[in-house]
Structures are given as structure tokens and as C-alpha cells.
Image (cartoon, rainbow, N blue to C red; front, side, top):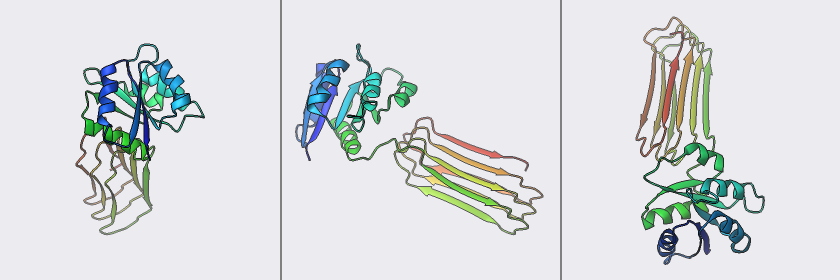
Length: 229
């Protein structure tokens, strides 16, 4: 199916670069120079995705995205923000804008094509609140007790959370709690939490957390709290 792409950028050069990137793709690319024109063009063009420059003067890409996402007629339209690589990207404005993803300028043709195709296809880097929970309570007088949680290949995930709680592990010999998360790639704000409380009278209690191959990760956080050891 033909992809309809609207580029809102005050740089005619950027508009042309995007058009050239998609000239061999099944796509129609239209360009406008400001946010107001983008909103007007939405009515007639009805794009599948809007590429919006965050630095437009009249209506920034952040504000444009918010207006589009708050409009019931267009709120399913994908939004890809275009940001300059020499400026710090405002993640708070991004999160509040409702935009689906962002990319830094200048960009390679293959990178912008992949971003656009993935977003239109529903392969977003922003699935929300992916959570895996494991609780084990009242494991008493256990020898060689093991709790394992592995989550692999959680790719391009934002706000991914893996929680493991183990309480009241009492009088345990060689108790082990392991959490491994591998191949968390291109992840924003990824959080892995492990809490183990009330580990009382424990011999050789071990809590292990391994997270490997956290590649191209922004603000990745790994938290380990173990109280009452």
C-alpha cells in the first residue's frame, strides 16, 4: 500500500532529502514549511505519518504532534520528530507530545526509511509499560531454592519494566535469585527492578542481576534493592 508522508520542516533541503529517500519506495511525500500549514494539509492529504521539525518557529514539532494526537480524526497518525544533532533533545517535551519516535538530523536515507516503515507497520520504539512480574513468597526452610526470570530480545522498548519480588525467604540455604535480561536494544528509559525483602537467617544467600547487550540505550536504569539481609 502506498505510504503517505507529510514533512513539516522549515528547511526545503530537508523536505527534498526525505522525498529523495523515498523516490524508489511506494510512497507519496508532501512538504510544508511550518506547523500551521501541516495542520491544514492534514485535512486534504491525510498522511500515514508526519515528520515534524522540533524547531519550527510558529508551531514546534512537539506542539504540532500534541495537536494531531489530541484530534480524534488524526490521532492514529504516526509522528516522527526531526531534531538537530547539535542540540540536546528534550525528552520531557517528547514524552508529553505523544510523538511516536524521533530521529536526529542529518540522517541517512536507509535510517529514515526504516523509521518510517517501522512506525507505519506498527513496529514502534515506544510500546508502553511492558511488565513482567514474578513473586515468590513464603519459601521457608528451602535448600537450594532458585527463582529465575529471563526476558530476552525486548527490543526498541520504552518504559520496559521487569519486576521480581521474593519475600519471607526464611531459613534458606544457598538461596539464589537470578534475573537476566539480554538484548535490550535501542531502549529508552528501560528499568529492571529486583527487590528481595525479609531474607532472614539465610546462609550464602545470593541475589544476581545480569543485563547484557544493552546497546544504544538512553537513560537505562537497573535497580537492585535487598533489605533485611
